[in-house]
Length: 247
Image (cartoon, rainbow, N blue to C red; front, side):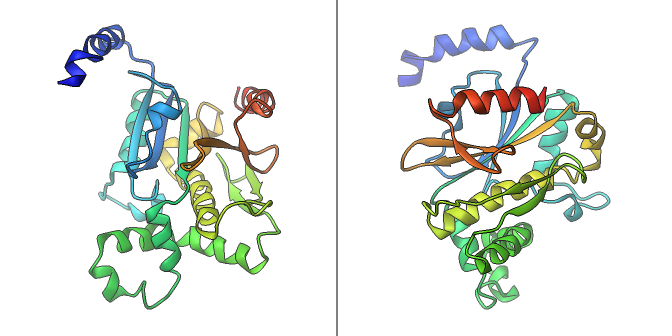
């Protein structure tokens, strides 16, 4: 009733405006966490984005969907980027992610055993689709987060390096969350139906990371090889990078 009395009329006008010709700018993957309200911190409105949410902001690798098997995530990619010709895909992770906190515990082989996975759809989901994130995390942990990780970008040749929290300001699970967020970019690039668009620079993939306790948003800068806070100090440089790299 509060919605009817306040914003309904305004929203209807917006719906009518985009009814026949919506022009969404991005497909936005994020977590189902109740604290994540992407339309607020991206300042987007009716018709601006396709939003896909699941536990841990995952985009499963294409290897999990042979033949006639389907999943919501690749279907959303096709609907957004092929059917609607959206040119940007954004994956947004966040701090204190309960799914990622669970993933950190799943490094324990007993906790991640098949018997335990049968008892928990969430454990099964994380074990199936976040194993590569765990492997990269373990590799970095062994080096105390001092070396960069290597990820595939839009094509196999467009690799990018990433230093994860080099200042060591975030806790260990949040570092895993940042690795997992970047891994999804590599997973997105594995889908054959996106291959031509990615190769021809008609489709671009980005990573954001949201700190829910400070409200700050970080953009992964391929130029700086790390997540960079989007603020008054860094905005101009990040904006120029996006314009040059993705134009």
